[in-house]
View 1 (cartoon, rainbow, N blue to C red):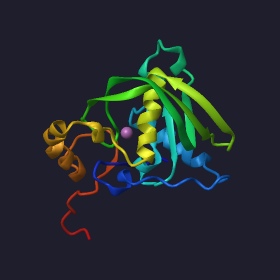
View 2: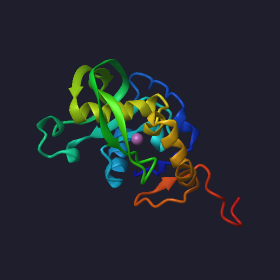
View 3: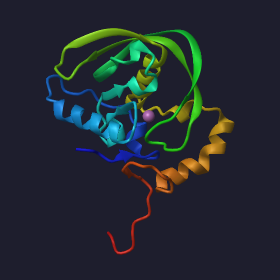
Amino acid sequence: MIYPIVAFGDPVLKKRAEDVEPGTDVKQLVEDMFATMYAASGVGLAAPQIGKGIRLFVVDAKPMDEEDESLQHLKKAFINPTILEETGDKWPFEEGCLSIPGVRADVYRPAKLRIRYFDADWNEHVEDYDGMGARVIQHEYDHLEGVLFTDYLSAMKKRLLKNRLADISKGQVKADYRMKFPAAPRRAGVR
Ligand code: NI
């Protein structure tokens, strides 16, 4: 099943997500999240983006750089993750987000991280990531904390984007995948 992706402005994107009850069968949900992510040509998708306030995200960073060997195997589901530490110099990268179509901006993030998480079989892992892999994980992890990449922008940049973000929440934006808009006007005759 392919879920509609929740757009900027929906409160679920600004709330800290709750842990998944350990042992819960999440396999179908994980499969559906990968399908939803691929349908939108994304490299990461967090559960709040399909309207579920739970600590689960999927990534497949392979399309980001076919030359980068470390990304070719980064197709994973992260359940109840905790970033244990972030180290290294902060570096900028122009990020986007499936919930905020058409908006991109430079975000500075630490170069490396160590993360603990469960996979869809509830095996626990502690792993280190750097480079683009770390970047994708940090962006998705932020979604579980109720943080969007636009939260990192300067006050001036935020002011410049304000109207565009308001338009996105109203559905006045083009995306080539199905979305759910929190502030879309109701159609006449529909209650
Ligand atoms: Ni995002």
